[in-house]
Amino acid sequence: MATVTVGTASAAPGTIAKGVIPVTTLGSGTPLNIPVAVVNGAEPGRVFWVNGAIHGDEPEGPLACQIALREVDPAKLKGTLVLCPVVNPPAFEAAQRGNPLDTFSYDMNRIYPGRANGYLSERLAAAHAAAMGPVADIEISIHSGGAHSFLDKSIFVDERPESVELATAMGPGWGCIMSNFNPKGSPMAYLKDLGKVGITVELGGRSATSPEGFAQVGRDLADSILNILRHYGMYPGQAHYPHPRYKGEQEALLAPASGIYIPEPGVKFLTMMKAGDPIARIVDIWGDTLAQLSAPADGMIFGLRALPNVQTGDWCCFFHKVSGMRD
Image (cartoon, rainbow, N blue to C red):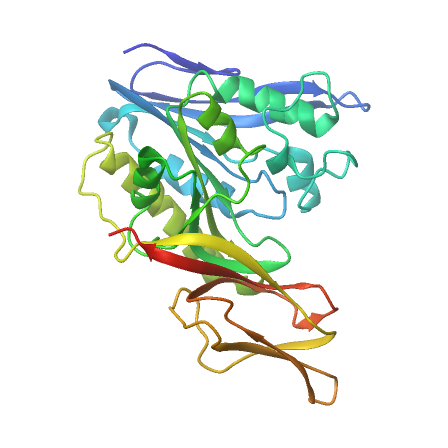
């Protein structure tokens, strides 16, 4: 077993090291770095890489990484766990989806592997990709609904068997597994081009923000990190799996009118419904119905906007159009 180095973090076997992936220096003279922790196991094995806060208004990933870093004992680990809790530091510090210092490459999850001589966000992506690509064997990018919505347990895969396997290893409750809608520009797409495996996972967001709710999301995500380690034989303990597992694709349901978005009573996350079943009404300020939203196919809701007031064309919810079962 050898020392594993990512950026300035070098961990000998059975140790943990923290450091940074250097990017550039800002105009004030402040270094711009991506924080990283390397948990290097006492025995050799694959490298599992975890990314968080590619979007800066999604703090669930950093919380999950904190918990995993506390709980994974390198003396019991086979292989290496790399935690990159804040991939987009300027966006995270501003609590914004994208980098406020960069107008032209705002969404970092669409520009991988970046450009070393490009816009600032492209340089962030390039530095991160250059550090991750040669090292990672399997990867998850943790996302959430951010400031605009809450997303329940859902996963995007590239449909290769090894991608679906990694999604299944997220554990119980993670049966909403959809085909990736973003085939280029994300870390998972970049790793696929390298012949490696990544997935995008979603959980959390503003509309469920409370001390208890945020803590539970972090706990659930950390449990999934541990479950993945166990599935691949990297850590002691029994892995557990979701049942049932669905396949299909995402559809964003948009407001057909301006007003207040009122979900129908009894509509629940990750619960199967039939095509045409009512999801919500758009009402005016007096409560009169202006429009209705219905299920576009058999499937389930996995995302809901945080603010009920909507304008025509605003995003209302994410719907998983289920095309079949994976079990």
